[in-house]
Image 1 (tube, rainbow, N blue to C red):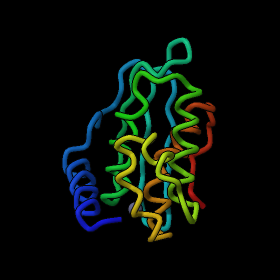
Image 2: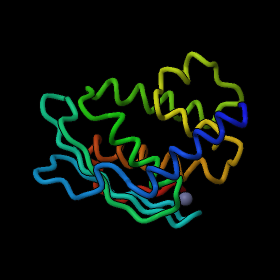
Image 3: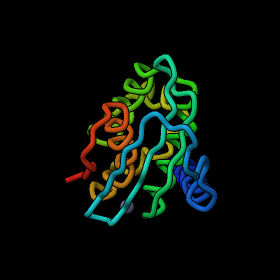
Image 4: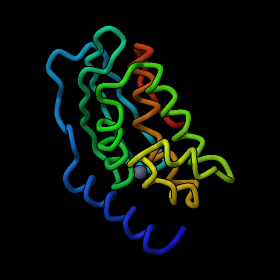
Length: 151
Ligand code: ZN
């Protein structure tokens, strides 16, 4: 990754940490779940309003590091208006980008803005900060009653 790209990615993460999007409780949520990453102390709560298997609205609340907050903020933008299947495909791609040794460019391009977390895979301890909100989203979609933890 070029240093220019790295800087751009960092700017996006810092911006979303400072001004998280869709940061609120969601009225009329049909699905919610809470997640916790004990390694870093990140907490996140995801609210979804799903109608006919489409994410009509999404919001989150949380308390954590810049990566976990920015990831949740970008997640809400990425999944709003998408069908469940598309959301799961997106999560799969995102997880692969962060956990596989080599990710092909085409796959990253399909992630849109979520690609800003590409550099996080170099810091394995931070991968869980970036994926916490996605695991929590998955739990919300599955309507799991137990709190999610990355451990
Ligand atoms: Zn964290």
